[in-house]
Image (cartoon, rainbow, N blue to C red; front, side, top):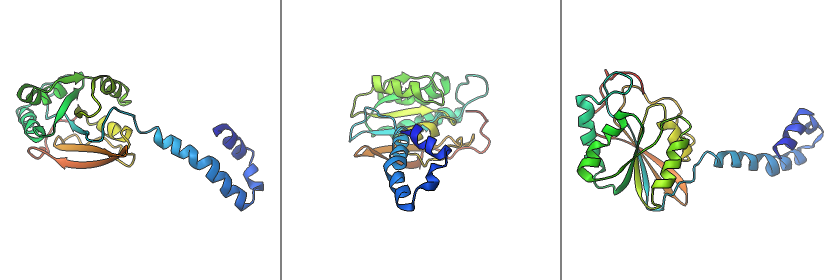
Length: 204
């Protein structure tokens, strides 16, 4: 179908269509293709009608290749636990980096919620594969990720108008909440814990 439409465009054969035929062609061919492309943006996850996806960036970190959290970061880990204590989280998904794992430590230790590791990359393929294999359908989940990946996750969950710019390097206090109704996602963005420091180090 796409080949046929592109071929017609390349040969300028649309020029001989009258307006009525052109509109009919647009409705029959172009619109369905756009809908298909848009539907591919949303990943089919085992999320039930009562489940919610929570997403945060890791907390404040030290410098280095795979750093630990700062004192403020460890405090934020506790803030996250207190924020999420009544959210009925079934699984926490953390990347291979210590800063995401330690952000989830308070929830793991204090609330007994299992953490599951995924490989962080901007395609998000491994993350969604791991979620599909490890999450029960009606279980709400928390994803702890990075400033250059969170926007990709949100987009692939169906929020296609969310900015694809990196989250500012000094912002660690964002809480993104995605709920589904009739398989259509809605996004709520909140803050949690202490306001982020404007002197936070760079990097994801």
